[in-house]
Image (cartoon, rainbow, N blue to C red; front, side, top):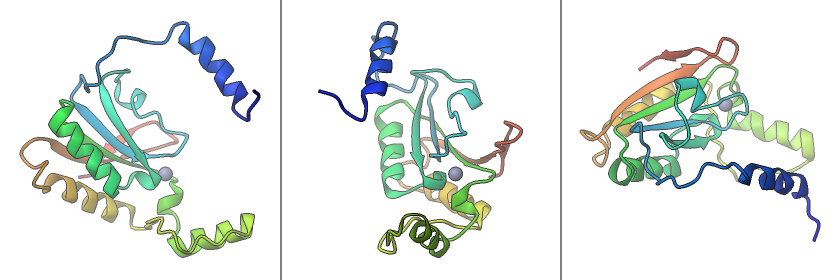
Length: 164
Ligand SMILES: [Zn+2]
């Protein structure tokens, strides 16, 4: 059977010949990262970690959505996470325009009506980051169990800045 994914499955067969095995599912560095889906970001590499060491939760904008919050709670209680980094980044589309603008751009690009979707774009990137850090650090299932920090990654320099 041929599919749209044949090239990727072929690559996977090559990968499987040397894929890391016999890991457990813990975050062995005790770290979880919530960050953006942006393809310029390498969440493990940017903080010097490797496979098996951290939980990575990716959302548009790196926002702490309901699913990301659930992931953090699971990570803290079951997966040995004691530090959570929320990482926004420069030149993020989710911080460069609002949802109305995204809906318009999508309509222009493909004609699709996405106005039923709430993307959560917010031009107040630092304000949103602070609110997300606050949400996690004061959450009754996380407070006292994990340190939470807010950061911004610069996609031009590769540097991470601690903001809150
Ligand atoms: Zn982004």
